[in-house]
Image: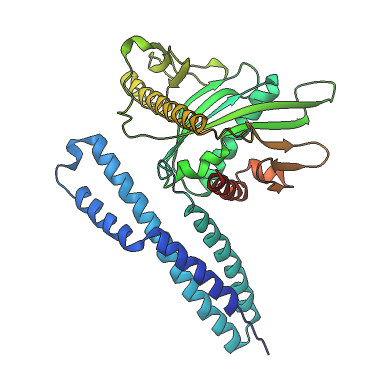
Length: 370
């Protein structure tokens, strides 16, 4: 007779899920949804397009978060029913379905638990990701494009909206740089653990000597600010260049000079935007990103000064944070957390949740130790 006993596992999941509900504060979440719904229903909402988009986006995010919590609660109840049914009927198919659902729920709840660790000042915001090729010639620009595809595939797996804001194609393979926005709850807090220098080691497909080639690409992640009003940028501190948006190989995709490049002269920070058709829209988007970067730079300098004054200067883990080995032993390894995968193809296809979860837990422990 079939005796399927998953009660201890389900009880453990319920305890973890209960802790998550307390941190998320479901009552507060419902209150926020009610408030935002009332704002979204105002007849004059769309008189201010920017505010309307902000309200509807926030409402959508909160509703998705609540739906996820309520969905997990229902699945836990359904799992117990399925276990009872399997035992009553002696049905091995139902038992296998229950075991599979337990495994899936465990992974889902673990991921949600990791999200509760995201309590930074900007963690709830959408993320702006910039990838730049480094040393390594064609291999580096190709690697940068591989990383871009990896993050876009990861976002696609989670059904997170993505908007590519700027892409600079290399003359040979790949890209020199790319900037894109991931619009999802806690996108910045989640993806920011991917920031740093990534290293690729492989037999180069661009050389004839079949030698191992090491190349590098940098990933930068900043939060999307609705209004970075804390930073005032004098007109004399910036240089604005306009140019035509282009695709791979320099092929023009826009017949007007709508793309915008803004250089902040005191810091050398450069921001380019070509996603919008209007030069005015591209300039506004570029200024917002520039203000965000300057605001974060200001906060980093303040934090570094405080540490110096406190006499608490500690060496960081360094920029190089992950290595991808595509020759001999196939391996992707995070140098901070020790987390690794023996399937680089899956990783480059967006299978990043394990790396991201390990990174968030590592960052939380590091911050608590500081």
